[in-house]
Every structure is written in C-alpha cells, then in structure tokens.
Amino acid sequence: MKKVVFMMSLLLSLGLFSACSSDDDMSINVDDKGDELILNPEEGELLYPIDLFEIYNREDHGGENDGNVLAGFYFFNEQLPIGKRSASFFVGSDKDECYVINNLQNLKNIYRGEALLPEIDFDRFTLVIGQKVMPNASYPVIKQNIEFYSNQCKLNLYVPDYNGEIASIQYFYYWALYPKFNTEDISVDFVKDRSIIRSIKDAKGHLYYNQNVEGWCISYDYPGSFDSVDEYFPLNIPEEYEVYKEGGANITFSGEIVNMTDDAREALLHTPPLGGYSYYFVYLTNVEVEE
Image (tube, rainbow, N blue to C red; front, side, top):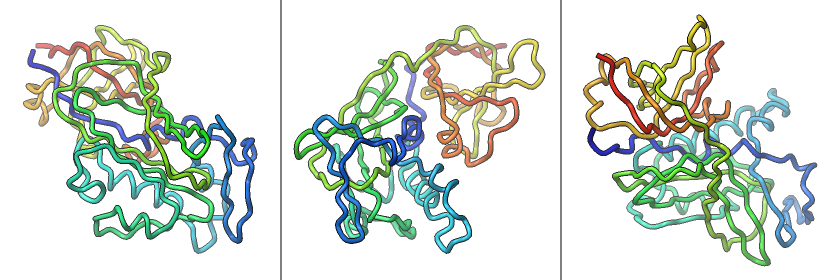
C-alpha cells in the first residue's frame, strides 16, 4: 500500500460547540461601557465559545435579524474550506496567524473574498480566527477554550492524541465567537486528549465518495440490524483508492474513531440527521478492498 495521504482536514468550527458555557455560568467580571459589554477575565480564567445554535433557538425568530447568527456560522465554514486553501482568508500566507477581531473594520482588513460579510454583533462577541501550517500531521479539533494570564491569553485547541504521518502540508483553519473581551496578545496551543478516541477493528463497510462534502465516507451497517448505520468520514485515505470515486468499493477497515457532534455534522453535511444514522471521523490504520 502506498503512503497514506491526507484527504480531509477538519475545521475547528466543526467541534467548537462541544464545551460551551452560557453567560450565566461564567465567573467573570463584566464592565458596562456604553453599548458594549466587555469581559475582564481573571488570572487563569477559562472562556468558552458561544453556542450559536443555542442563541438562534432561544431568540425570537420573528425579528429582522432572524438567521444572522447561523449565517455567520455557515459563512466561515464555507470561506475556510476543509482540506484545501482558503481563497478569502490568509491569502498567500505560509505562516501561523491568529487574530482577535472586535469590530467590522478589523474583519475587513483580513478578508480578501467577494462574498457579503456576515452581520456579527461586535458589541457582544469577539471573533477569534486563525491559520496554522502543519507539515507533518493534521487533527480534527474537538473543543477549544481561551485561558487568560495578565494581559495575554492562550487559545487551547483540544485534539485527539494520534500521531499518524501525513504526507502533505496542511493549512489548518479555526474560528469561533466568544463573549466579548479586549485582549489582543494571543498564543495558540494544541492539547492532546486520548480519551476522545476509540478503536474499530476489521469492520466491513462500503467506501464511497460523497459529492456533497467533496470527501470520502464509509457506510457501516450494524450486524443483525436493519436500520442502524454508522457513517465514518476518513481523515486519511490511500492515494490509489481514487479509482473508486465513481462506484465505491466494499472494504474491511480498522482505525481510530473520533466522535462528531450534531453541530459538526450539520456544518459538514448541511442536512438534518437521518433516523438510525450516527456520524464519526476516523483515522484509518488499515483498509483493504474486498474482491
């Protein structure tokens, strides 16, 4: 088998809702400055991303701003694509970058696309957006938070503790909206977590290319069940399997599974979940086509 080549990276935004806190749960001091609410986190305080789906579901949908929250969610997922270079952010950049955005002009300064920018309430939210260049490995990010120290902060990106070799340089993008804060000095750190991985061995499935997500999927039917199906999205695939893009192939596969949240699935597939279906990411450790 040829060296496994990376086929699909995962935006941080696909996993950013797995560890969110509401405003009521935060033990953070808040200053009221005019129309703005700016958080002043204490030393060692953790700040979690805003759950955009929660905001959308609890606010009145009859107003003129109906859908703006989720419009931003889909905008960034489209402009920061999976597994390929962005044509609108970090254009021409081959270095790590991270921005703390607190107004529309700052967002315009880093955007090079032609799509209409989403309406973000910068009186309430701070956008953290970045690129990381990863020459040897790329990971799906399961959750994130920001840790504050004096006048600087650290963005923690939680990833599976998996060290599979990746053959090509990846431009890895992440973004999230946080309760508004005004710290600009930010660093980025990966936190490896083995507990979010489990294994699958010698499973029988059908490999096919999903045109909607422009990536590979493996459909796995539970033995003895007529309506329980797991859909695995491989984070790596052998290069020679390109020949199966048209008709797919029945395979035996093993790998390391990473759970996918409902919000991650919606961001990836843009469809409601099917009854009896569960969705996961998987690092393949072995795959063989059945003759």
